[in-house]
Length: 384
Ligand SMILES: NC(=O)c1ccc[n+]([C@@H]2O[C@H](COP(=O)([O-])OP(=O)(O)OC[C@H]3O[C@@H](n4cnc5c(N)ncnc54)[C@H](O)[C@@H]3O)[C@@H](O)[C@H]2O)c1
Image (tube, rainbow, N blue to C red):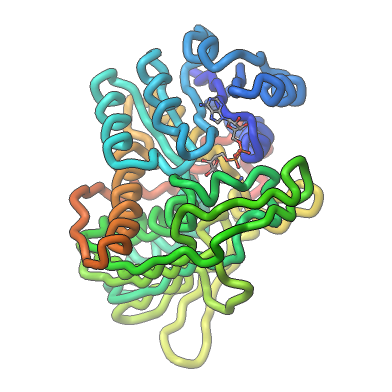
């Protein structure tokens, strides 16, 4: 049975979800809502949906799953309201911005017999899944160490309304951390302890992105440069460098070093990329994921350079609901990622190492056949 999707939060990221929706067999978007009614009406007109108020959408008999694409600070309230109304929830990252809210979402879903799924679904793409296979089959040996780098100059030069990135719930750890920590937990299992330092870099940001907010000055309220060491339960130790105060750098997104080889993991913000392995000091050998379906560049639409299949996790969750099983990018995994990120921030604030209390299982691997079976039409499935 096709799951009917009601989207709340008709901002920047809603477009790619709506565009990709046509690919997937088990989901159909029916309605959209936003606290800014004009934003909901615009998306509804663009994609042939019913614009509703948020309250109408929670109560709608035409919605099975609420897709929560609101700003991070609103995630918990929206997800809890949707669960209270008897809807499954799939939320953009992070699951919530506090541990208590994250716990409440997972507990409410369990109590009501509903599912919670959460971005990032990039871990289901061929880039991360190939790395996972290489780790699982012993191609790199047990992982000893690694470095992950979230580094850029920030968001105010491209996002038309970037203030939320610099307010509580934002910052590079909570905003981009889900991709990197989500990928690491998928590859290596849960994190047991963290130690971090952090600071505000630039105290103020000026919006240069075109749009109504150009010239706006934003006071930075969260650390924008955080360096952390993550100790995994497996024994692996990974350094995470998370900063929006970097003009240019030459680091790979994620490098992992195993007992028999080193592995370069592609940018976990996207689905494809290049996977590389080195068994000596001379050279990397690898493969590009561009010829795999979810690895093929489709974004930006006008001149594609990245594989952006956001919505794959939502489609996988719809399929899981039908099969009465847990979604791969599920609540326990998303809660552990949140727990690790909050522990990093608290460690930096308190100046001491901290144990991470939660644990989760690694999301099940997604085989190529399973990934392609989520697509709508047979001809599309052959594209890859
Ligand atoms: N922009 C990106 O490239 C990007 C990429 C991946 C993930 N995300 C995530 O997607 C989410 C949304 O980001 P965005 O960039 O689209 O933000 P945005 O500010 O462009 O859009 C968010 C929308 O949510 C609406 N909203 C906020 N609170 C609401 C509430 N309580 N009820 C109803 N509507 C509400 C706002 O009016 C706004 O239209 C965030 O969690 C972000 O981390 C964004």
